[in-house]
Image (cartoon, rainbow, N blue to C red; front, side, top):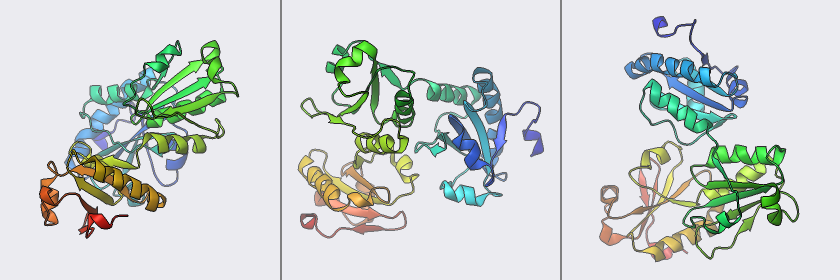
Length: 320
């Protein structure tokens, strides 16, 4: 397949176990094509991916701004296993070495891929011009607000890195200088406004330059412990590679959902990161229920889905 790659024009970086960490860690944004040469769809994507790289390189000439890279998963099965790649081709986005959960699912065309990268390079933070804007926020969303003395600061740069990763899960806003002064009584400040008109704000108390700390805090606020699984996000959740603990409940049965959320938080918080805690609409998920000999009339039902087998929790009333 040597004809697929034109060294004179290609900006595609081949990754292996010796260079992958260095290249990805130093890239603001990297789009990686995990492919297999025997796969016809991989072969079809190569020239498209290469041309998209050439288009984007014109707009972002700094080599670390955007990297287009590829992994031959037959030659480097260890890398494919590390990132849980099971189908080809798979396009994964990385930011400063961190793989994003959502793979690229858009059209496989030069225009679509280039537009996707432009979108990833756009600023995910809305700058507030007046604190009155804060009072009119959409309180059905999860909002993270940073109050900074100045934009050109390590504190804001760290905040920006976090926002780039979690902007699909939270709305990020910032205010600077005199506008933000009233909220900076003890220095730069980051707060979380949870959903709900009367929900109290939560303040980040750690170092604003410690990326790991502020990322962990923000992720905890932006990504619910118990998420809803739908037909739209089911494949995406599966690709996270973690078994599911699912509550099947009727849509209007919020009492069972609240009890499930409370018990997961009380008993299983330490398992976050090894299990995906989910809830699903019984009516919409009738077919999975049939696999465990259940119907919507049996809901609420709790089950573990290991992707090989489903295990039913005997009795919801024994949850607590």
